[in-house]
Figure 1: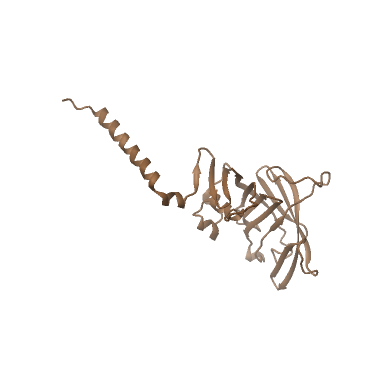
Figure 2: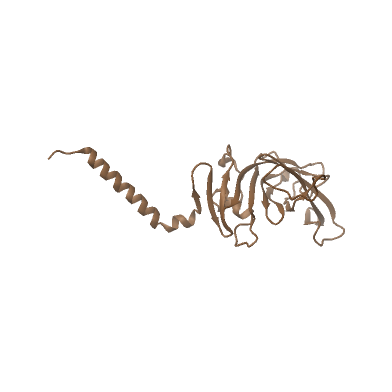
Length: 240
């Protein structure tokens, strides 16, 4: 009987493929630890407690350069899983947003280093996870609240965070003790002695610019003027 190496190779390949499929189907722990379902290219989907979202990743983003923080480390460096937390998708939310864009400012010479998300929910909003430079009087910083349309020609138009826009976010801040500022949106009931400030937020393509008006609570040194440009990392769009 003559030995046919081609038949043997085909048999081994079929066996190997069968083992791989069986291993994947039965390994539930692997699925639980990694909820991302790849669909090819730069797009995938991710299951969150708030539902399934399509992930659109920006091109040219080097994951190794993303600033590290505890939440990103808990997500094993996966920017999409990290974004679900910053976007508020880590719990079953009946008012879950339709879209959330994650931006990063990774230049360590900046006054704000870290992440910002724009969320398209009942109202468009912004949330940040950034660090300030203590050597330049940084006090720690957070920007959170609904975005106000600054298009005076169309003042009633609802902002679409997926398109270019210009907006602002007003806040009231008061100093409980030196360097310890309490901040709240001006629409909330706040201490009337609080100082009113404004953040200006502008989107142009994949860039997000965050600028203070005259002062901010981020730095004790009033000569530190916040004007930072963040770049889009990815977008989460509701898939159901």
